[in-house]
Length: 498
Image (cartoon, rainbow, N blue to C red):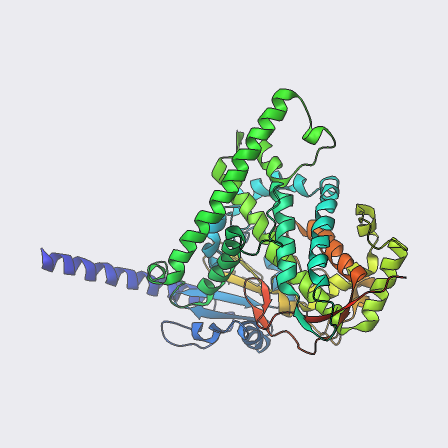
């Protein structure tokens, strides 16, 4: 019996290795038209990317040597790295390369098959269902949430503005504010993250962001068979129990409220209806049936993740850029004076946010240099023909380096210079050469929501504080979301409003 078992195991191992070898051989043959980055046997190039601060620079170096196109090996997986304009335009517009690449699987336990992770056919249905949630008439109703929570953030920052010589990491303040905003917008439930840093939910969300990123880069944690041997496996289980139970509790509570309102025949709060993201999901159908509780949870958790970390990074880096460029900050505050007159403390309106044209240029330029999502991945489960008979093989991921595409000197001369005037004539910027929200069919569904939120928060900060340089540049980490190892440092002075 023992000999038979050993023989069976050896036979299975040989079969598995043979399959991997054959699959690898086929993919290499189809990828012969793309330069391969030399790597180590078996593990390939993975040891080059253990430090997230050098991840993008190394990939950019490899791609630059090969006309913006090369591929790397990560154990038994292959990944095409792209900054080549023609190639990335093809990938982003192709209706045959709509699935997300392998790395996104680490979000599955947290975000399920929500819009971020959904496979092609499910994604198309979900996107169609969710698009009405981001119509301008809906977005207008969230401006009060933006305004109220940015006011709380400024109250907390007032304590830091006593001494303009003190250096402050602005990121934690922004992160808690955007978490409050996204929770209240998505679920209509304030969680008070800014005033309750010890919240289990707040900690669980922050820790899950760290765990997912580490699984992408760790040669041990990336394997499902080895991951349970690590402490993060058990931390993830605990975090997901906290996050999912909170979301499900709110879903059930809101479902009861909607049923009660329907019976009583009244509108939301007896007045103008404020359609939260959760309300839309509870009233939607897919394939002719209502969404299950698990499907709703996945979409809510996805919306909260995508709308929290990305916006936190964008706002923080924009405030940093403003602190470093006094001339740009002066123009931005002139626009705020024109809009608010003598009353800087009144609530902003949707129309006024739309009128902040110069601030929008500032945000766009900040996103060009510091894109919240530094890269996106795509995958096809079938061979896709490129041009001249070239093949993008099934199962081979495509990594689009957004942070490098946005710095192309042919499109943006002196690309590292912060210059909002670049976007005064957007028609002069070629499509797919500026990708802060990705592009094509699978671009960011919430980009209008994000821009309005960024404007509201940054406007509030500008009206209350003078942003001063801290003399410490961020050490960029290209994780799933752009981050800084040493924080995002500024100094704050009190703004005299005349």
